[in-house]
Amino acid sequence: MPPHSTVNSAGPAPFREPRTVNQTPFEPFEYDLTLDETRRRAAVLAAMGPSWDPLTTLRAEEEAYALLYSGLDADQQATYDMLVAAGVLPHREQGA
Image (cartoon, rainbow, N blue to C red; front, side, top):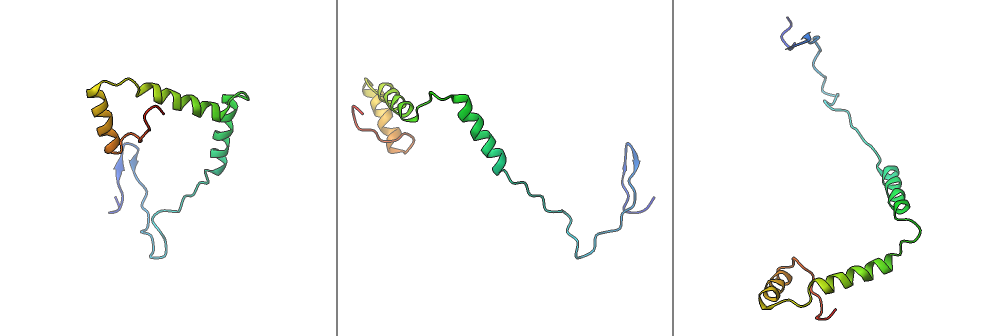
């Protein structure tokens, strides 16, 4: 068996000469994701349908956040303030 050969379940691997200095061990592999990303975005927009209104959706999300953080008791407000100070939650005006 040649010294550079390996043995596996299929038997010994064929002997291969070592690569020369000008050859790279790996061939470059490139794949342009632009087309795939365009297809993905088109599929997302198609799934949302023609009635999707981004401004209405954003307003509804803001209203949900306002409702979520309204009516906090003292301990909850202290925790909320701590998370805002740490940058975990964004700062929101009271009542907004």
